[in-house]
Amino acid sequence: MRPNRLDRILSAESELQPLLTKAHELRVLSGLVYRFLSADVAAEARVVNFKDSQLVLAAANSSVAAKLKLLAPALARFLTERRWQVNSVSVRVQPSASRGPAAGPAAVQLSTSALQALQDLHSAMRASPARDALGRLLRRRGAAKAEPG
Image (cartoon, rainbow, N blue to C red):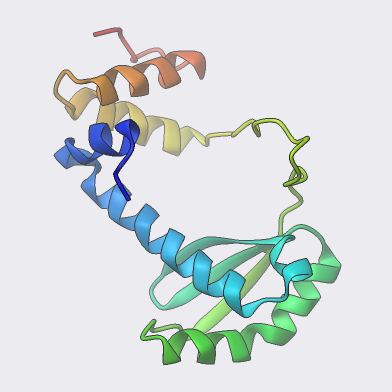
């Protein structure tokens, strides 16, 4: 599969390599988790993070969270058998917009520390389409330091 334009732009930025590596890791892990879960549970859950051998899942409601908590030990074994070192599975209830085709793009809320980290990254990047895109994102979020160019 040929990488799309965005992948090529992001791959060219050395500062973004840790972010791309983490995104790839979460994408692969998400695929395994969704393969393990039944379709109805998978549709209402998502992988949030994987750090220090702890998998963090978000459930759309408390009923799905309860199912995920019951499945957590079997899921950890399933992932361990596939060479992922998962010692624990944490589940959080995090209601989200429907994943159906009628759902529009979700509004993402960035914390103050996340905005600061993105501003620092923007400042450290060399002039490129990725830096320009990050600058536009920061300006839309009201980040003062995001100067054009």
